[in-house]
Image 1 (cartoon, protein in one colour):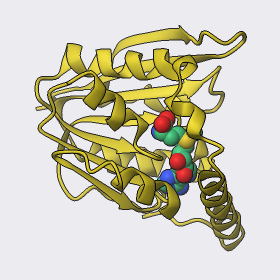
Image 2: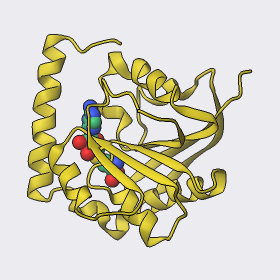
Image 3: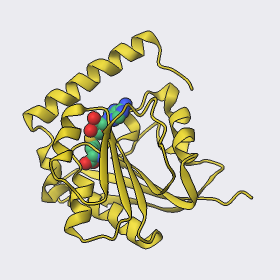
Length: 199
Ligand SMILES: C[S@@+](CC[C@H](N)C(=O)[O-])C[C@H]1O[C@@H](n2cnc3c(N)ncnc32)[C@H](O)[C@@H]1O
C-alpha cells in the first residue's frame, strides 16, 4: 500500500481537523437542503436503475445525507456502510440510527473495505484524495466491488485531475452526465460504471 509523505500526512491531518471543525459549526448542514437534491437524486436513480436491494458503500459519507435521502425515498437496501475520516460527521450520522447501516471513521488513503459491495459511491469525495494515491485507493476499492457491481462518482463542476482515473480496464462506463442545481452556476458531473467480468 502506498503511503502519504510526511508532509502530505501533516496536510491531511490538518484537513481532517478542518472538516471536524466545519461539521461542528454546521457549515455543511445545507447539504440536506433542496438545492443539493438533484445530485442525491442522480445517485439514487443510478442505484435503483442498476442494482437490486444492494449492499452499498458510501466513501466520504459525511453526515450521512445520502443515507438520509435513501430512507426518505424508501429505497430498498440490503446493507449500507458509510465511511469518513471526520469523527464529528460520523458521530452526527450515527445519531440517525438508520436500519441495516453502519458508519465508521477511516481515512480513505488507507481504508480497505472488509467485505464486498454491489455499489460503491464517491459522492463529492474522490477529489479530496491525495493525487499520488488516487490510483491506489481506487484499485483497493474496486477489488471489493462485486463483478457487475457499479461505481458511482459525483464531482462538483469539472473535476479536473479526477475523471481520467475511471477510464479503467475493469470498468465499463454506463452513464456520464451533468446535473444542474437549482442554484445558479452550480452543477455536478455524475459518472456511473459497471465492473466488468474479466473471466
Ligand atoms: C463535500 S463532503 C461530501 C459528504 C457526502 N459525501 C455528501 O455528499 O453528503 C466531503 C467528505 O469527504 C470527507 N473526506 C475528505 N477526505 C477524506 C479522507 N481522506 N478519508 C475519508 N473521508 C474524507 C470529508 O470529511 C467530507 O465529509
